[in-house]
Image 1: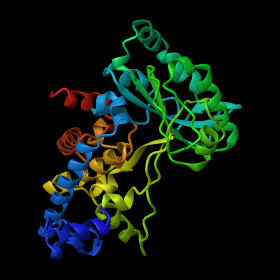
Image 2 (image 1 turned 135 degrees about the horizontal axis):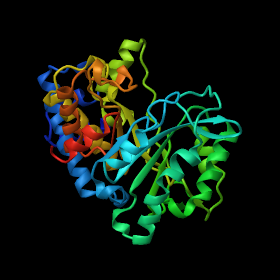
Image 3 (image 1 turned 60 degrees about the vertical axis):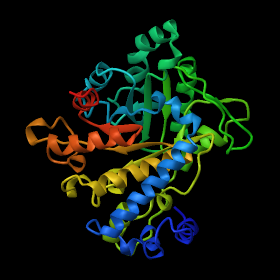
Image 4 (image 1 turned 45 degrees about the horizontal axis):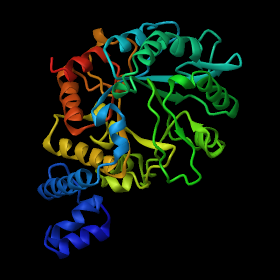
Length: 363
């Protein structure tokens, strides 16, 4: 919410002038501060009204604006955990599948590290040929209301031009499977997407935008869609930047509007709870309000929104998962999963695919 808007709200007595600064000045923000909670509730009501009044039609394209399970790091590590893609696909549809991409032997491979060994599976064999039966069945049935069935999310480990161009070429081989939109002369003109069983998303690097968007002539179809830039957080220390990430108003974190290429917003959990998963306490009303405000702001602008990565496991349950994403228990992560579902988060990333799907089904 802009300072001008807060000021105008104070002028018409929607919010007392004494509370208006709470919405714009992070120095007022504390989790136990009654004024902060009141102001956040007010922001939430206001942003919800904006979303409902000006709902962006493109948001409905992804699962009719309902949350999607996002299978985080859905690929093998050093030859282990090769079943991850099968696990993700077996949970049901729609489902998002994250593929980390690197360059090896002159082709794109699926790898958690940019330092490849030559043993990594190729993007073509590990992902595209694995989903071939699913996609071909969906195309034969032609039930477009259910498309996209699979959201493929690229996390590039490096962005050298030869890797990006090679990925673009692979996507071209499977373009009949992939959701596309025509390139427009004005980047701010969002062309309608032509639904197909697959939707391909990538992240915010400008190098990717250059290859996947700027180099594409008008009229040629875009095959992949990038994420928005999160605004740079200015702080004098890491501690201050971590604090600001969790307390700045949403419109100071996401300042840009969608383009024909940039259609979604990717967030860590640091933007919700200060310090992220490892420093999270009990889930509170203030946390829920914060999450909902971020979602409403993204939706109000016309972006889908993703949060990563929501895990809760003990040592014996760890199957190669990152402790940095661990809330520490199933109970703790379930509270966050339910909040993300209730808030309308579009893509909820986790390593615990089956458990999140069970939560989504109310089990």
